[in-house]
Length: 285
Image (cartoon, rainbow, N blue to C red):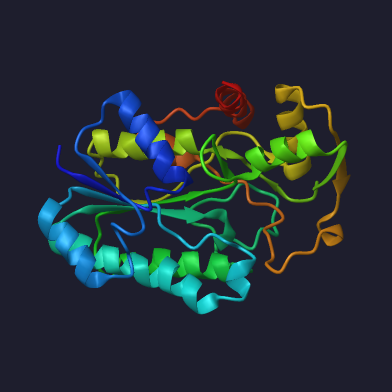
């Protein structure tokens, strides 16, 4: 198996990939921080590709500050679109397979049925628009790619919703959490396993896929489960999105249909609550 370059390795998913790769003894993976692998530096990228001639390139680098992106659309676009184009161009030149991570934010989120890869996109935020543009620039440079859309990512690494709720649950007696946004939490360790499955099996089933854990929930019910499974005594109260206004519009319903990733890649996907329990056990030590 040839080399794999992981860009954005210092982030949450990058750290999860490192943990899962170590557990599975996956060889020849090179983890690159933002400084070591700057996706906005075409010359630096060219040197990395020439030195390592990667078989696979995994792009975990992204502008993910959803509300801040409303004030920094140009920077978000440079990272989420132009940086992806830089990688895709070199992947085309070297015959590398690009694995790009995308998001449920590419959808309007106004429906009530699980979202297929073929469903129309209509992002309602700068973050969602720039991530969709990142998806769209890839095919101009290479046909050897996997785009994995995911949602509500959390883990024991970096900052995320689960760790924030645990902290707030220790600090406060009561939390108010949105109940009218529905989606599926995704344990980033499980997503890392999906990525490594593609690499280890040298899959040629290229294309666009949805990956999250199974099931669906609201942020309120997710928080209630976090507190229940971690024995956190804080009380959780449901509120509407209108009671907690944000700069960026969030999808109200963004449950991803995983039929394609299960059938084409042969993956079994855990239920979100089972994976949450694993994460909480690891966080508790």
